[in-house]
Amino acid sequence: MVQHRNTRTEGAIKEAFITLTNAKGFDAMTVSDLAREAHINRGTFYTHYTDKFDLRQQLLANAMSDLTQIMLNPGSALEQPATSGPEGQLIPYAALLGGLRYIKNDFAFFDAISHSGNDMQLYNRTKDIITELLLIEAEKVGKKPGRDNIPAVYAREMLAASLTAIVWLWLKRGCEESPETIATIIDHARTLAPADLLN
Image (cartoon, rainbow, N blue to C red; front, side):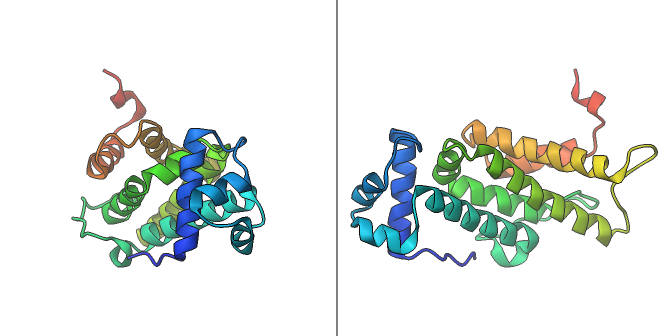
């Protein structure tokens, strides 16, 4: 299970951030709003964060740290066991499913962050995690990105960006499908050429 760094106060501030981002938007919220919503005084807020931008940055950093831990160490971080997927996956099924479950379980936060003006940072940090995992898995089987006349840097970007885009679309659609469904979609898509995705 992921070790949560949040104290009770930090958890209340996080919930206030989510509520206020949804109610009035990140730009309009103030530290006073956050303190009032979290039922703390402004001084308590400032013992944890320098301002609302620092709050947003720390919340995102904590979430990305948890997501990295889950996806790079799936056996130790999953709350419920995941079945293994087929051999030869770009990303192990347990790692992918663990990451998707984490996002789904904390959807309110990820949705708020994506609407707080930090959506591209969230996307890029998620892509960085996926890229790292792809490189680790490729090395395990003695492969590396790149083929024929596609340089490694472009091959790596194509792989990571396509997987990240699926996760991103799922998040933007409200995580309607189950993590298992998205993991299966990604697993099936890995065997298809782009033209195979057209009817």
